[in-house]
Amino acid sequence: MTISNSDFVHWHVHSEFSQFDGLAKIDQLALQARKMGFPAIALTDHGNIQGWIKFLQWCRATKDKKNKDIPYPPIKPILGCEFYLSRQMDIGQYSQGKDRTKIIRQNQPDGRRGNRHLNLFAMNHKGYENICRMSQKSFTKGFYFDPRIDIDTLAEHSEGVMGSSACMSSVINVNLMYGKYDVAKEVAGILKEILDGNFFLEIMYHGIPEEKEIAEGIFKLSKDLDLPVICTNDSHYIYDRQGESHEVLLCMSQGRCVKDPKRLSFGYHEFYLKSAEQMYKMFGSIPHVFSNSVAMAERIDTADIEKNLFGGMRLPHFEIPKEYSNAYDYLCKLAEEGMKRIGWDKSEEHVKALKMELEDVKVAYESNNYDFSTYFLIVRDYIQWSKEKGILVGCGRGSGYASVLLRCLDITYGVDPLEQGLLWERFLGFDDKIFVKESDFGLTEDLVQKAADIGDDLTDERELEEDFGGVDRY
Image (cartoon, rainbow, N blue to C red; front, side):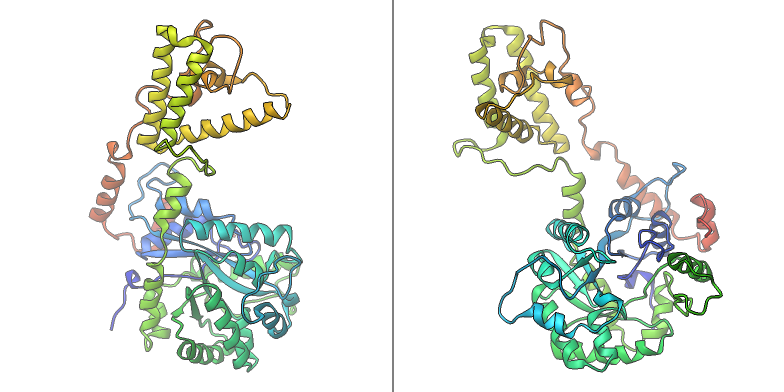
């Protein structure tokens, strides 16, 4: 049986944002994964999510740093983080049913100051938000040598989150390595429960003897708990030839020399972005670990994440009166009342200006999903609250002072913007053609078709380096 890269997804990948541990530059990592033809790829940096946005952009980019077309189709980005799971943090009191926190604390083996690895992934935008919250808490409330979370924190922010058993340094795998199968089983069951079944087990082999022992326990856990198993490679650099450079990086992280026998070393140069065929040589006898990698990736709703991140304005919910169907209708009503209150309803010039501004607000929402209606209502709300509480409020500033609409909403006050010749257009910074639909450009479809026509004829990694500005040498 043969296998192609389109039949496999890498779920355990580190970049330069795994400080002094990951060697892969995010742009080169994404481009190489796209060139190799993987359908998706995860990013699981140690203890932080700082590379997420850059990773998203390079997985979808159509131009490289030299503004040349990228001849490879986009790849589905999976946003993850290899969290440090601690026995206890001074946060979180969540508990349901059995005391899960107590079980984790008691049975987490010693080592690495009690902090063990756990991979978590955002399944949708809610999961994105929850992992962001956990990451923030890991630094602000859980930091002790590493940014840590505990099981209570995970349970509190588990909606939309998928998890995996991670590497040899995880709670599950270390217990398996120590021969504590019952403990590993209980911990895996707890994580499956917390994550509502969205939990899978990783098997990996980099030449380390203990990984074989762990793999046996992993398959037993899979059978006993009905958990899917996925083969992964703990990727810390892109190409196999970068193994020695990675050893130097690890020395830098510890302030030790390469010849120091006490330095941290991975021991084997197998921690790179392997092809599906290379993975198949190790795990080909258990093909479901490949199909599972793709099936689990299909659970990830990347479109929901991108829509909420880049599809327009992200605003808090604003409650509008029930008699109005949407924020825009309510905004128009308030603006009309404001015009009458000021007396501008009798001025044809002001009526025309307000109509234009409201039309621009409507077009901005319909064409680009910019919800200025809700935004203006929120601003009006806290401006009114401030005035009621006796808090000083300015008359407005910058281009907002030129708006007839904002004046009618009592957000600004002072001179008549039309008398002073002030321009509303400056507020949104657009001309009459800026609000166009993405489909009007036709760029995405054309580039995808172009990539399909070109095909994957660049098979040598050095061609990738030449095309995209070179791979950084360490």
